[in-house]
Image 1 (cartoon, rainbow, N blue to C red):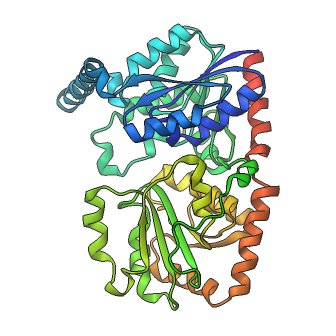
Image 2 (tube, rainbow, N blue to C red):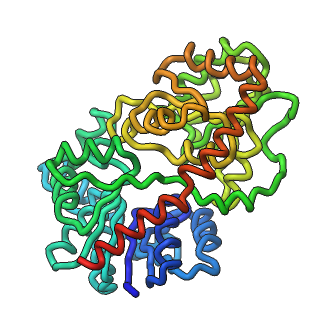
Image 3 (tube, rainbow, N blue to C red):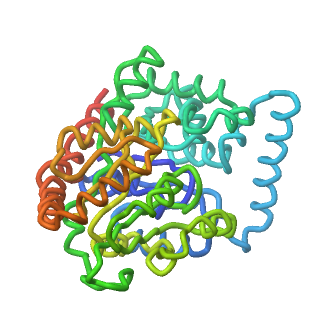
Length: 409
């Protein structure tokens, strides 16, 4: 079978889609390596747990552990110099896209894979250079990288070069995929390109067997429990609207937020929480991948409060939506194009509400609180859709067909 390299821009534990791709490809008999970057000690341990007993390998192409001080210093210097040159003179260089760009390219050259699949911003540049050398490259637009920031943040980013890289890869790679039909359509129109295949970032139904049945989050099992999860708890993720909605929720509930919680987020969030809610709103740290489904499954309602004023976030479908379905939670989701794509196909799993509308959010929550039988039926419907319609096992077959076609060309 074929040798396949998957390149990501960070830790494996924060990249569920490449994990599933690697597992699918190795199960199909391919020799698979995932190359990424190691930053954080806790995440390194999670990465090691993830790759234990796997048929595929994970390689930290750049390792920022203290034992690699010289490498750390050189890579960080390259990044700072690149940023300063771009700020002063507008000159582009690869470190602007992420740490370890040149190290990643060097590794890809040495690996000589039959197919290299790129995922991140830095991966776009690596993929372009590999195309120059005649390598087979595939691209996974997990995000629309050039449209994944607020306008004011784009001023310090190499947007012109990102767009050029996106255009080249979507037109020249052996295959391209993305996370939703909405994003696939928008990318194709923007770059006058063939439409990428939409592969939903759902999760294997088999993971349901790992649910531990323990109660670690909830404090009062007599109260309905609402869950929100993201990599980071902070601004711009819909929490502003949740806080505004609290005074309008008609019954006592527990609210559980899960994610990395830096001090800056604590200072922003906690003063906004009404005093009467402080004993019913709980903050939880991230957990290892194999525990996350168990913790989500403790709850009743899952919130996906994405904003639609950033194109990439509007068009994609976030992991949390699929995780809620797999855990059997009723979903309340904002009307982004990506989330509407799922809820329009399967309206029985929850409710779509306008973005940035605290009253609509409170009404959607109250509707489920005041109709316990509806909440039960909605949770059952979510689980059924996850099992029968959009589980990863169904997406995997489509993904493997695309890979085989790319390898055969």
